[in-house]
Image 1 (cartoon, one colour):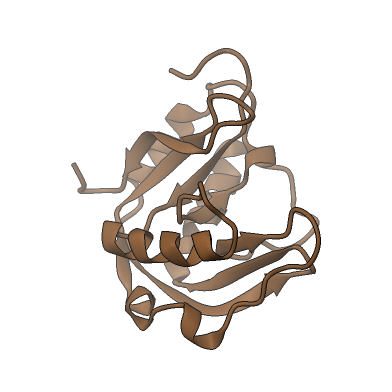
Image 2 (cartoon, helix red, strand yellow):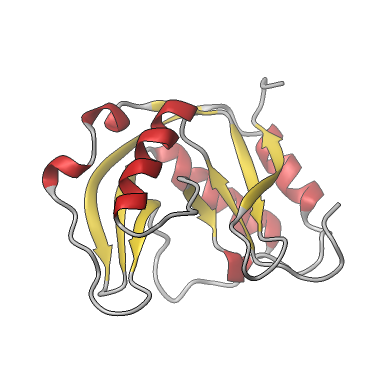
Length: 170
């Protein structure tokens, strides 16, 4: 159980270990030193502050079959964020199921499945050369669980604190 003190946390899909390692190297070169490569499904401000929603997430995950995900091309959210597009109908279906189960407020902008590469904290957003993203990370991978990430303190990096396996996964 997480502490009673609300901490920033989010729900995400994790690529396989080798893909995460390659992406972490790219992300470090773009200034994201403590980042854990992940596909955000529910962002930090959307999750309730308490832990009463765990059962709802567990139910959605246990009713979700593993599905393929593919990391695509580099894109941007405005002037602040560079990301990889994420292809895979399963991500959108999972997001929709979680919106219903968690009673999430409607979003001002449509949900865009993505894997953040870099965030401009100050100054210009770093460019990402076409060859900076290894082709090996673009092969499809099978999403088998939803992971909950949290920060133990505001200054600490995010870490996976809980996993919600999909249907048929241990």
